[in-house]
Length: 287
Image (tube, rainbow, N blue to C red; front, side):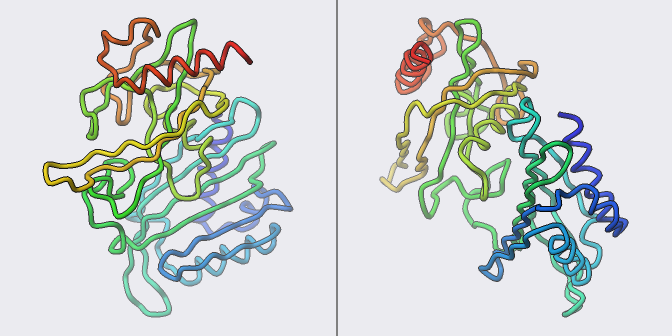
């Protein structure tokens, strides 16, 4: 896992130094690079290492100071590392100057790197102007509007079974703040369902999981006192198996525990949680 983090960390150091020879050594010759440009409503796709490096050169030519000074980023895994491959996710706020217009600009940016055999095989990035982000109540993790959203939000959850028990987390934020539930959260743009649930489990519980089949798909809609939709999530729950890491609460989880599936009432979980856990256990016994 550390090798994947180190590779992505080195990528940004090479970007800062504009060391294209070192960048080339980190890419697979057949790498596919995809950049989503929200402000232009377009995507740029580069096929192969040379085209990807040309894309980076053009990016650095236009945006001065984008990866140094006030720029901050962090890197984390979103699944699959235990099998020798995996997506690594990096996100940061980018402060830069557009060399064509001379105007300062700030973006919320993230990249997904598919790492395999010590090389980046796919590089997907997305960039959105900070001023263009949603106006609702911002999510503490992602800056998106969960409160009174303009459209349903996709969420992922995990039934993680360990030694006959199930992992529960106590929510730190609304909705369901202070309540026990399954680990999970909202899907990020450009992220697969499987990658999203693996990321959320790692962030909230410290566990690396092997993501299995879908257990259930359902809506969670909560209205306010005027009958307006305050929250609307479409939730996809997966059966997962812990394959690494150490159980510890973090991120949106204020606490984490291993619970007896037959004694979930003592945690006052929602009835739907009990149903999903029961379905997951039945599914696991058929595998």
